[in-house]
Structure formats: C-alpha cells, structure tokens
Image (cartoon, rainbow, N blue to C red; front, top):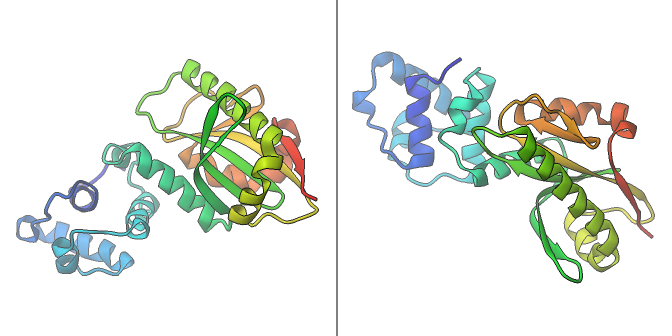
Length: 227
C-alpha cells in the first residue's frame, strides 16, 4: 500500500520537523492519525505540539506503519542511512540480541568499522547496512568482499578486542562462537548470496534469523573460542 496523506503527515512531522497543522486535516485523516498515534501513546494534539521524539518513538512509528501495510520504499524516502542502522539495531534488540553499533577497530595498518554487531549465542552477526534507493550487484559484491575482510581481521585481532567485546556484547566464557558477515539493504534485490555471504533486504531479516540454524553450514563464517 502506498503511503497515505495521514501517515505522510506523521512521518514529515517526526522526521523532517514539518509542523502538523491539525486544522488542515480532513475528518478521515484526523481519525486515522488519532488511531495510529494512540499506539505510541499520543493524542493527535499532543503529537502535533511536540518537537522532539526519542529513537524508540521514531522506531515505533516506522514499524507500526510497516505492519499496517505501508510501502517500505515510500517510508524510506523520508529517512536517512543513520536511521536505517538504528532500525536494524532495533530489530535485533526486539529479537533478544545484544547489539553494538559503529564498532571501530584496527590491525597494524588499517582502521575498520562495522555498522552493527549483533550477538545471541552462539551467533555474532557483523552487519554492513546499505541504505540506497538503487543498488547494483557490483556494489553489493564489493560490500561482501569488504565485510568478509572485516570479519577476518576481527578474528585475527580478537585477542586485543576480547575484553571490550566480552563486556559490551556480554559474551560467555569458554564457548565457541560463530561470526557471520552479513549485508542488509533497505530494498529487495535479485542477488541474495555472494561468496556464501547472505545479502538480505530489510523485509527478509526476521525470516533469515529464524532460519539461521537450518542453513548456517552453507554460509561463510569464522569461529572464535572464548577461554
């Protein structure tokens, strides 16, 4: 379903700071806005007069609109890449993963950054978020190569990172963990794997995580053993 005028007014107010003039809404738009805003704890008047919204409130707006069938691509036009990373983090949190964002590390010569690291025993997903309106197969393939490299470097330098990651991700001791590089894009695309690395659209993420036990052995991964 394409985005309707009521949903668009809500998104523009919360993300683009455009004032919602309730007096200019039709009765139908007011009814839809009121019904929707009740889900995040606002009356339409309170929402229209508010200027600042927490990340949790922003994420609730997005997820509830998607649940109602609003076209994801229409919503994405009003967001930016940083919000996309936050949404991915929120999804993993909702599925009981411990999440670390924008993790920076280095080897002897190069600095690296992973957009999102998500952990739920025994899996650690190293995620590169791709927020493009249009993305080519060549760009996705290059992203896979770089994410595999980041994964390999993390394993290589893990003895130097272990204290930080154990603390921030609440990793268990004396356990074997599986590290998977993953590319997550906002839009659907034809290329789903490259070099055994999954390339997942936002809409496929929950299904992928629910089925990871079944096909993990067919994916590229590295392991670490915590002692």
